[in-house]
Image (cartoon, rainbow, N blue to C red; front, side, top):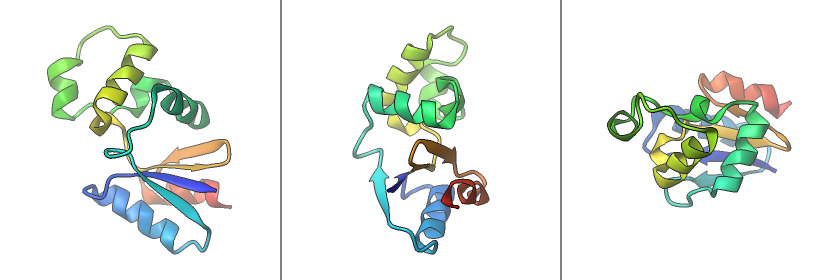
Length: 114
């Protein structure tokens, strides 16, 4: 089953959702600002993405700039920040099986749909 971590207020996330709606494959939408992923779920997603936690953070968000920018943080601390403030999670994230991509640009989503 394909999953998309989606923020309806984000244009890029809406574009990713539209691409999935048109792909003909079933998928689940996770509105991660409402249904916040656990630390374990985020760590699993990071494993699928093959990224360090800092690479999944939206560093231009005010919360990051105010509370975290310039701080030396462990991977666990970065994940905990994303759980506490899910707006920090880059979007959209699309997962299929044990693979995932950040759908920016939206064409990257095609990499895991095949």
